[in-house]
Length: 111
Image (cartoon, rainbow, N blue to C red; front, side, top):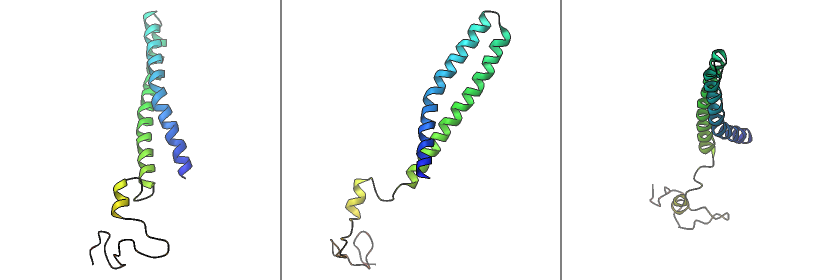
């Protein structure tokens, strides 16, 4: 599932970057056609531009949602240096590096 989310994120970022350029080209083409007297071509380009604009907004929203899912699905307690200081990893042999014991909370106070 994580691979599919990454692919969706990459596609969303690519669409978020490419669709505005395509939108500008289509709007420019529509303005050119309208100025040359082709009203139906200008209207068609305006409709295509509307569809591209909606697709651009949807791709931005999908990229944001996909990115947040990936971040929230990541390993808990990793990636922030403060987490390692407050919650040191236990020795695999079972010894406690701060001699807190098993009945204490993560800050070292007895429960």
